Length: 286
Length: 129
Image (tube, rainbow over all chains, first blue to last red):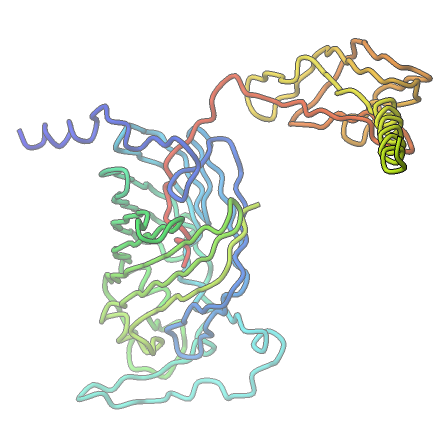
């Protein structure tokens, strides 16, 4: 009986997923939307030797067709659509490799003079944790993931999103997933302003964690045995405040904090237990 | 008649002459019918025959422009009442002008037969970060 009620809720005739006009939660079908944010911010890098990514210009391109969509770095095809539920096949770039990429101009144009692996050992309680700089391990590859995304629109302002993905270019040969609850609402006391927040978790299979954050024999480092990691769950929260100045201009504040799984923090490559994304600026919709 | 009364009469006459000359120089409104073109969906091209009407007190040389593109010209004319074929993909301004001045203009709008559709976004804003 309870499953029947759940199905009834999912497939009921209320048009909660429908939209009447373009907004922060709705897109016009068949139209490209391009925007550019200009401001100041940072995307912190939790790895030893990893550069924080400065956020100054943030371009954004999105397209929603009847079934096809492209948003941020995700390309998707919605093959099931009801008033409350949408299921899409998606493909997207896995962002883990970004932490191993030298973003800062000085890292691109100036050769590092520091010696190779120094095997820095720090004492933490009874455990000895090695610190390994990302430049001392073989370069990790960009992975392209593909899988299924489910969006459940609970009501006009809230939704739950679930992703299950697997890499398709033989990089880490494993799964990753995401579960996220989001809410977007207007602020009555502050006109033309919306606040959106998300609570969620990234789930990375041990294959993914081992490929990016484990130390294998192939890494050829002076560490006794291979460093094996486990399945990781990284919870996060995100808050964004958008104040619309006109149809095209808006002011945007964005903050996201990811809490890394203890197992990942134990990796010799990892120095921080959090990843922060902070941005404040103006946004122009073309 | 006193001198102040004479002054008033002279001012009145000047005002009448000035107003009449202004009226002679004034131009009528450019009328293009129909002023709305219906297309199936946004981005579709619209072709239609429109009636262009315009009247002026004095004969002039003028051309009708679709935005920056010249469509047709008239020489030494006071009345325009003609059918022309136009083609447009989005709202456009049709301007009657010559090298010296713009006489009148009118906007032709594109409307879609099917209302615009919207759907919920499936990814959170800036979900890459």
